[in-house]
Image (cartoon, rainbow, N blue to C red; front, top):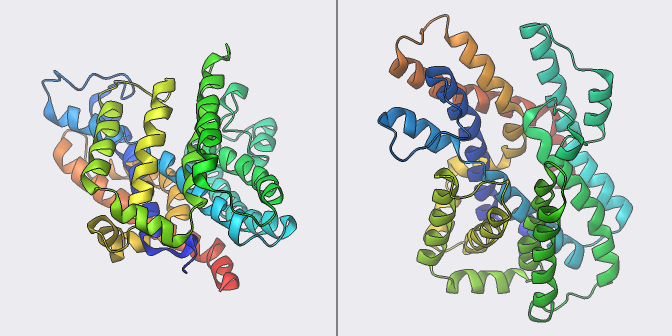
Length: 359
């Protein structure tokens, strides 16, 4: 069997998730710069300007991060239950996988902000970011690299995986028997943060999104493929479109408990269907552009934010905002192109050695 971490379709899904995060920052900057709107609160229905509505529509693609969490749950669950080689090895390899790239990208962002705006972070914020505390929004720690907040959740999840592996002791529990416990964990991880009377505590509910992935990781490759093939693509598409439209139209936001429940279902179904390598979705996710982006998705995820903002500022010297269509076209094309180049360079410097060592 092919380990889940080497699945071409899941690699392509990572590429799709990274592209969604790019849309958030590129279209958010464009909407703010051209229209000065509050992209978080702007009402799309009834907007008389279709261009402005379109920019806000594409900006609201924050759920790309949700897919990363579900994918991590699947991959780590599969690793803990089937290919466990000990806690020290696991923690070292996870550190080697995420920290060098995180450190390098954050240093680049800090240097760029210093040269561009003459602003340096405080020593306290640097220490907090070194220890990945910026994702705990209740602490009000600014993320030096704004996209890196999700790594806080990943790091805590990685710390829990050895406990899961030791508790399983090489035995893979039945998904059917574990379903009530998984459902209870999913519900509690949403309900408890929602009840904590502290600002931003609701964001702890992001931990719930690892649970659908763990459930999928409890299935072996053949079982996942069978379930994925039996799952109608129309059902997956309907769930994903309904969830994403609800986010874009602000039926709920990630400040609402309902968001996490809906995301867990929609993201879980999409990740499961991606395991059907022979289906239409699987073939699309295995296309070369998505595979390339999936392979470089971590570097792309961490470096694109500063590239988008630097390119947006530099472009003003050639294309003024008085020509919004021209500015938008050149901005989006250049932001994506330069982000891909930067991701390739960062990958070569900080990630390639890891994959070569793994092989």
